[in-house]
Image (cartoon, rainbow, N blue to C red; front, top):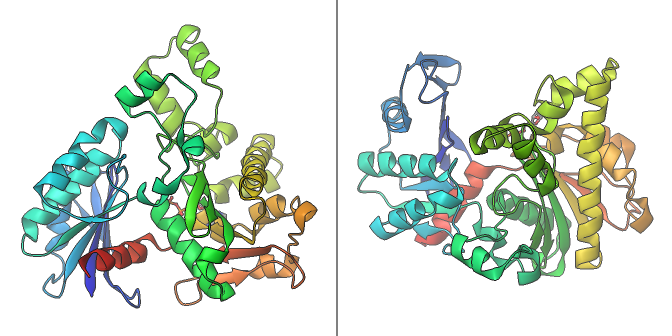
Length: 388
Ligand code: ADP
């Protein structure tokens, strides 16, 4: 099946056309800085300026650059599926309305996702469209893991609970790991660490997500590129009371100016931070230590939650590429029998054709793996599953 994948962020649009079985890419385009005068589309090495374009204009322009004739279906990444969507679903008016109703839960993401759905349905009205939710994989979180310790009436009135995100990636890499280990996913306890610009970690027990670090929003949990992850809620009260920050300023601070960027003071990009740390920059050294410490703390917690772990998986930009981050975390995991193979770790390299690399020693009780994530390919597969 040939699937067109639409992934709209608040200021970007990614369009991929893939063959669902093989994952072969037929077309790829990206529009950045949507809504600004600097908006532009990139297709391979070619750039087209599109000042002031919104999501619809960007999608329409991208669609004009390629033939859509062979496209069988369209898969849309939707960040928040709330309580309602526990699996991907074919989009109709009712589904569209439900995604709209979820905007209060994901004010940064769902409006963009919806704009993408509307534009693509307008241009390809005769193809089936499927919504694939970041939250869906985490619908299996047990009550004790998804409930915040605040009053029930508030929780119920405002949909306040832990939902979890990056589900498509966690599910995808868990499956690739099980294939690699020649095991049934239902017999495994896995910890999947998705370390990209956004970072989250999930405990996957017998194929089901039983704990995950992102919560009601993608702000909770690990240190990320620009998001702070876990922070004492008291800090937010202090920033409001004593630093005079408004709600919107707090929102911006926690989502866009914190994490690796806030810690390092120079960049949200781990490559820059690793380079400056190696040159002796203390803020960058601390940024890496805080990042790795938080990750290690979660891994320990998830081992306890599942009463053990068979494999720990590193994925996404940092997880797949930073041997140094993996080493700094894994060197503390010997206490339960996970042994990093230093050379395998340094030389690990994954891609679509060779998506898994083993980085533990042959005698390690717990396997350590690097797995390539591919959210666009995962969305094509989920789209196909729905339509079958
Ligand atoms: P997104 O969440 O935007 O999809 P990615 O999965 O591409 O992000 O991850 C981006 C992160 O991966 C950035 O912090 C980037 O610095 C990091 N990264 C990519 N390549 C490397 C590398 N070789 N070494 C260290 N970090 C890397």
